[in-house]
Image 1 (cartoon, rainbow, N blue to C red):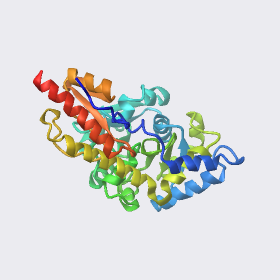
Image 2: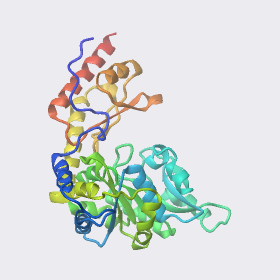
Image 3: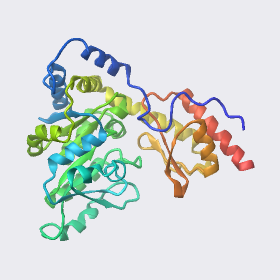
Image 4: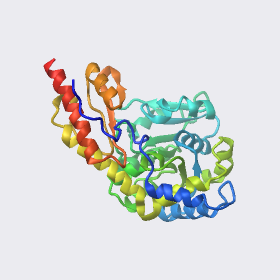
Length: 355
């Protein structure tokens, strides 16, 4: 089988893309001179203020190394002994962090089976029989991911209703925002839309992803609830997330927040996924029934065909039992790369149909 040249851009993950030039320039600028360590530098101080302006709220923001560390750090500030975290069964903290929240925090994760990786208020009903029962772990935190692991996006109202239910039970809301840029672009593409599904929807603590949106490394943890923020300064060090030369993380965020670059880049990734969908939706065997809400798609490709395609242009299996894979677009995916990828998919599937 003769396949076209493989695309220069990968459709495996947004983690594989490079960093935006403005982010690299910000790091370069931060490298000029000596500055105080551990977050006392002027870049970090400016960026923390930029987060207050972003959310129009007196938030506390801390910078850490990466996504798993950000989740562990944030949850550590929110948990007390004998407490549990309620999450979707498909959530990253449940299936993609090597048991880190449970091992490091000593906390139970209660994974709720869902069809779309989204929790609903009814999913918290079970907690009523556990809260106050001295023989039961105490459900204390509802953890959601936005964009979810299945590429779905919570609406503002869905988060607000879930927050109301959680707070009504004395629980708190945590949002894993590894792809917050994509979610913001999907839900309106403005600072106001970001605030609407975070600050205004009852989120207590969240992560604000940078790496997947065009950064090099590092994540931010944003505290809306001042009670959790008070403990955060010490817990960050406790869970090994205090970076000495912090300016190299915060400089990336300063670039990302300037002129809302993170929203622009999230939108570019989302638009690339929509273009890929539009060019493959007519291939019935892929079973792509609805446009992506963010930057991922989950087509069906049989083992023989996907093995050929993955050797040509790597992407990940998702649910092997269903022959389901994941295609994901990054901020810098080009139209040319999309066309090349689609041409390869069409070539392989055409041969598969005639074999």
